[in-house]
Image (cartoon, rainbow, N blue to C red; front, side, top):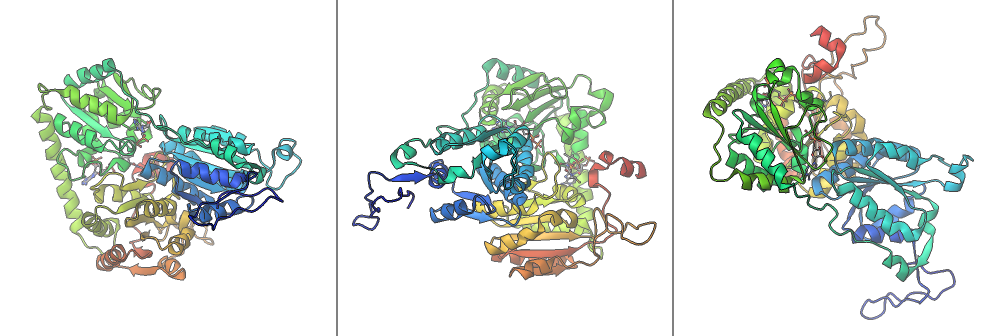
Length: 589
Ligand code: COA
Ligand code: ADP
C-alpha cells in the first residue's frame, strides 16, 4: 500500500476482487511514500543506509514497498557502497543517513564519489529549518545543505511534499549527466509526514527522460585529434576509470585494435581489455610515459596519478613537443595541467566511435620500432615478474600471496576485485590481471583508505558475482565492522587481510620504550575470527596452499569468508610505491 488516509476518512478496500484498490476521493499520500514512488519511478531499486531519527520509518516503508534496503554499521560505508553502485550500474547509488553526525559520516563518501566522478545521491534527514536557521539548539542541529554544497556536484533541499518529485529528478539528473558526481538531497524531518492529495502528489513525480544524454563531439574537434594522431611516431593511449564508467567497451576495443596503438590502463580501467592483451603496455609503464610523442587520454585526468603530465615521469626535458589528445565529457578538463593540443569534448562512446570512423582505410599503424621496443621491455618485465611469483618464501610475502589470487581471478574472471592498502594495493595492481571491464574497484583519485567493505557490499549486491576484497591490515580496519553486514545479507564476499602486523609493516619500534610505535598493530592478530563471530567462514592462511584452498572454496560456495593471510612483517615499503609523497620516507630511501 502506498497511500495514507486523512484522519477520519473512509478506508481503502485493498482486498476486493481483482486486487484493485478502491479509494476514497479524499485519499492522500505522504512524503514518505512520495519519496519511495519517485525513486521507484526512476528505476532505483536499492538503498544503502543506516536507520535513525528521522529516517527510520522511511527505511521500513521502503522495504515494505519493495526497495532493497541494505543497512550498514556506519554511514561512511553505506556512502561508499552507494558510490560504487553508481560506478557499477551507471545509475546514481543512493545513501540514506540520519541528521548531523550521520550526515557528516556519509559526507566523506559523497565527496569521494564526486572526486572520482561516480554518480551518487546522499539523502539525509535533517532538523527543522525554523529552529536550525535561528540557531535555537534543535536535536542534531546543523545547516547540512550549506556544509554539503562545496563538497559535491550539486545540493538541494525539499521543503514541501509536492516538490519531492522535482527534487529527486534534479538530483538524479545532476548525478549522472555530464561529468558524474555526488549530489546531496536534504529532507527535513517534517517533510515525511506532510500529506497531499494522492492524485496530485503522484502527478508531481517526474520520470527523468534521458538522464545522461549522449554528447556528440564537434566534427572539427574530431578532425583535429585525428591530425595530431596521424603525425605521431610513438603514440600511446591511456584509459582511465571514466572510460570504464562510459560503457563504451566495444568502441574502445575497436579503436585500440584498429589503430594498433599501445595502451596503458589506469588501475580501475584494467580489464576494459584483458590485461593479457598484446597491445597492453602496463608492464612497461615508465618507458611508454617517458617516450610517447602523442598521448590520447580517454577518461583519465592528468592529476597526481599521471604526474600532472610533466616532469621526470614524462621524460623531463625530452618531453618538449609531446602532444596530448584528451577525450572527456567535461569541457574544462583540458589544459588543467599541461596544454592539450586536441581536446575532444563529448561522451567517450561518441568520441571514440568518431575516431574509429576517422581512422579510415589509409591509417598507418604505429612504426614497428616503437611497438617492438615496448614488447621487448614488456617481455623482460613479465619474465622478471614470473620469476618473483615462482618463489615460495616462508612466511609469505605480498607477491607469493598475490600469486594465488592472480590464479583464482584468472579462473573466475567475472569476480569483482576490491583493493586497498599501500603495498597490498600497489603489488596487487600489477600482479592480479583483470580480464573484464568494471571488475576492479580501488582507492581511486584520492588514494583513500576505508572504501573496502562498502565497495565489496555494493559489488556483491548490484552484481551477485563473487567479490574478492584484497585488503591491507590497516586499510581493513577502517571498515572492518561491516563484515557483520556481509554476513547479515549472506553476501558472496571473500575478504583477504594481508596481515603484516602494522601500517606498511610491523617492525617499527618506539625509541623511548613504552607504547608500541604508531604504525604497529597487535602482533599475530586473527582477523578471521571476526568473520566467524557473525557466522561466516574464517581461515588462517600461513602458506599459499592454505590461501588457495580458502579462496577457491569461498568463491565456489559464495559464503562470507575472511582469510587472515599471514605476511612477513618485514615485507612492505613505507607508503608503498608513492614514497615520494611522504617526505621523511623519501629521505630515508
Ligand atoms: N608485470 C610486470 N611488471 C608490471 C606489470 C606486470 N603485469 N604491471 C605493471 N608492471 C610494472 C610497471 O611497468 C611499473 O614498472 P616501471 O615503472 O619500471 O615501468 C611497475 O610495475 C608499477 O606499475 P604501476 O603499478 O602501473 O604504476 P606505479 O606504481 O608506478 O604508479 C600510479 C602509478 C600512481 C597511477 C599507481 O601507483 C596508483 O594508482 N597508485 C595509487 C596509490 C595510492 O592511492 N595509494 C594509496 C595511499 S597509500
Ligand atoms: P583515472 O583516475 O582512472 O585516471 P579519472 O577519474 O582521473 O580517471 O578521470 C575520469 C574522467 O572521465 C573524468 O575527467 C570524467 O570527466 C571523465 N568521464 C566520466 N564519464 C565520462 C563519459 N561518459 N564520457 C566522457 N568522459 C567521461
